[in-house]
Amino acid sequence: MDDTTLQVYSVLFVLATVVLVYTARYFGARRARRRAQRQIAGFDALPGWAEGAIESSRPLHLAFGSAGVGEDNTAVALAEAEFFHHVIQRVGAGDVSPIISTSAAATVPLGQDTLRRGWQRGGALTRTQWYPQGRRSIGYAAAVSGVIESERPSAHIFAGSFGSELALMIDSAARRGQGSLAVSDQLQGQAVAYAMADQALIGEELFAAASYAAEDGRAPADAMVMDVWRALLIMGMTVVLLLEVAKQMPWLSWPAVAVASLVLLGLGLLVYRRR
Amino acid sequence: MGRGQGVGAFFSALVAFAVGVTVMLSLLLGDNPALFGDRPGSDELARRIALPGDVLLRLIVIFLALSIVIGIANLLFVHVSRLTSGKFYSAVLLASFGFTIYWYVTRRGDTSLLEAVQLPIESALAALLFVSLVHGSSRVMGKRNDIWGLLFVAVVVVVLLASLPLAELAPVKAWSDWLMRIPVSAGVRAMLLGIALGMVVTGVRAVLGQDRSYRG
Image (cartoon, rainbow over all chains, first blue to last red; front, side, top):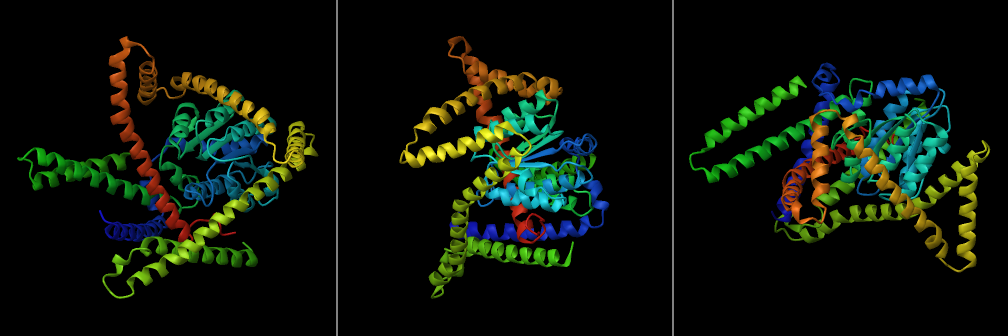
């Protein structure tokens, strides 16, 4: 594929995403679409943790990891800031401000702003904490383990960019009986999150988190855009796979491929609706 | 939201929208004259479209270089404020910070402190990380008591066994290679595709002002 075709496809893809975002917002406003949102088990514990933090007067710990504004994982940092905003609003009735930690210096202002908007009783400057620096930072993991000991958070949400150092933090939290939800855009961190955290999100659930944490009716619509793209991607890959198989089998004609695609699409929709 | 905050939020959203759309159009349409056909001046047009994106991206690089100052200021501010509540480790951190600066300035860039203190401590923590990982793995079945947890543990066991240098385990090694090459690779690609989709949607939402991250 030459550069020009690739650029044209990119423009079309971005425009289609813009249309989808607005369409999903429109339907999301009608609330009825909320029923169609698929269940993600990782978010089930969130309301309980928020209530626990309020009742015990202990903070929630929200960690960006190395997700940094201006770097290749800027979208991760922005998505998690939105997620954390909704989480902070849930504990807004409590006495103790949540703690936000990051190992990316450029994320410090974002974290402070997220905390300031969600928690309007001050403390944004000291409750957003930076520990040096960069991806797979052992120093950051050690410092967060210190925070886990000294601040005794009621639960932790590690949502951002983490490597295997995530194990140190989750292990420290587990030893003190503190709950943890974890997700990472790095594969090592994702594996650790799945194996060790009480609740784990996987892959693009990282970006849908804000939609699930939001208490208003409009936000869940955003998660649907990703579901739509994913469904289209799966359908496209299935069709390509069937076409490749068809080349090996002369009896498999275009109509047969179309019927098989429709059957798979129907099954996919059924599974989606049931979940 | 007060009137001042509302104006600030609107201004933030406007700036984010303008910058986001400019960079997006520059990256999508710039630096490829073929997009504009064979018309005269298409080279110049493509270059001009790419220019604003280049300038803004360079500004980001400068901001990132400066952001370390923000980080250090935050670190000092947080730990000075914690001194008042008698946090011992904050005092240690501030003393170490001051001593390291003093050492570096008086010894004209000598990094032996880094090599003698920082590296051994990080190595020790990395070793501790191994223990944490083993401990965590041993608890997987307790946390994920289902078919997926069992599958996770089975794959870990197969890959660990295959890494042993024993000739008797050659079939396990072949199986492990297949696992890594086909199912694991497919799963990794699926996850990365999902993350890429999420990044596009998040980027579009941010540019369109749907996110609250920067709206004040």
